[in-house]
Image 1 (spheres, one colour):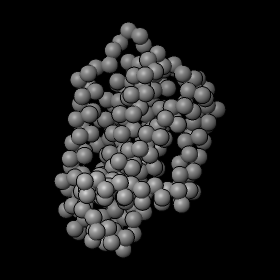
Image 2 (tube, rainbow, N blue to C red; image 1 turned 45 degrees about the horizontal axis):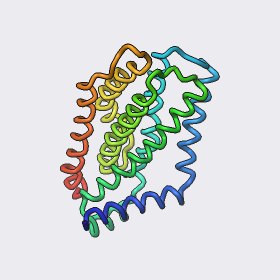
Image 3 (cartoon, rainbow, N blue to C red; image 1 turned 180 degrees about the vertical axis):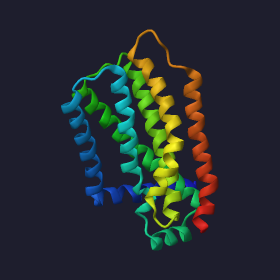
Length: 218
């Protein structure tokens, strides 16, 4: 129970920071709306495969903008303070939960704007919403963990991009492959691919919980 209370308190802290630093949140919203509007002005209603590819690529860059600051915004003094009062596993789990929720909100917003400006070719909307939830969660987990690594590398955000893209590209390809099935009534979502993505997410959580305490000691 004490661990749950610590996680809740840390999530509340991150939420209050987002409320106070509204420029960061609104900056992400502006990025989403501007990017999708530019796509609309350029290609208007693309074919289904192009629509699907663009959607997931936009999700990737939204996640980088939304999650990259997760650990990079924490100063050395603040991290030392947190190190003295909370368990590192509670700290990283709170970051994973908060960034997952934030990314899910951004994913829903981008899906709404995509449907509004670029048309809605989706035949199986509930299944696609489920994939959006899973994809947003997957992306947020990976980049939250990479943000923690980058924060320990002298605040070098470039490391997050270098490490992140080789890891995230296979996940993106699997998500695109699954998402292609929602544009047709004839094909079904492959349960094995879905399970593989979930297992990769669980692996990332386990790695974060196991390795972050060692990162924090440095």
